[in-house]
Figure 1 (cartoon, rainbow, N blue to C red):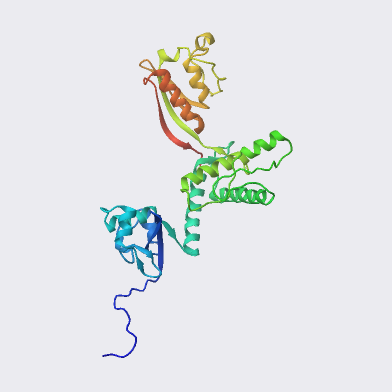
Figure 2 (tube, rainbow, N blue to C red):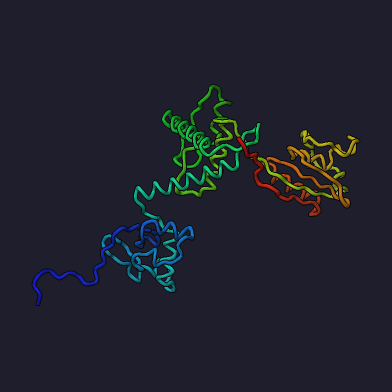
Length: 320
């Protein structure tokens, strides 16, 4: 017989491991995965679980090699749930334990996505031209530094997304209240989607104006029966904007308080309008915030006979 210490023949040494943990039924379950593969699997890039999992088993403690008993798995996930389905649930819902390099790479990726989305949705209010990603990054860095300074000065600023300071940064109660209601930007986080954080970033940029900036307008096609346009609307009609197009109804009393007046109040600029077969059609530009209200108004007033079509989600001018 060989002399010496006998090592377990089935011992598996796990290296280059990323752990995914899920707490359920007062137990913490872990699976051992390859680094970077979990994020690729969650984003749909990797589809083969064999390339994601180091060991197709569920553990209570990976570092100690302590596998989860069948009784614990049955109690937490159900007696009829297979190990494969349990692993899939942990992969989908579990918390990924990553190293500093992986976390930095993930933050950088999300940051780049947020900047790209923001740069495509915001424009200079005068020229209607988009800003470069570099200018957007500088503006967001400025807001982030501003928020950090307010946090040091005693403001209640959250660590992710947007936040609201509690201290009145400007003189006067009214000014302080307004500033408390304004969104703030503190930088990207890994717990929220890039689209959600891009929306937070746009709100903060528009509110604080580190550079002259506004949302790019939407280009729509609005159609409505002519007979409906002349009908009176319920409630007061907002002041009609100067759309830059001639109003076909010369008689002011005919159009006072009509459906057309209300539609024009949502529109910022009309590109073209025409009458065809008893229908009024207009290609126009609106602010993104007015789109929902315009659609709801036309649907309610026309009872489905009018419609709003999106031709372009964000109209921008390219160039120097």
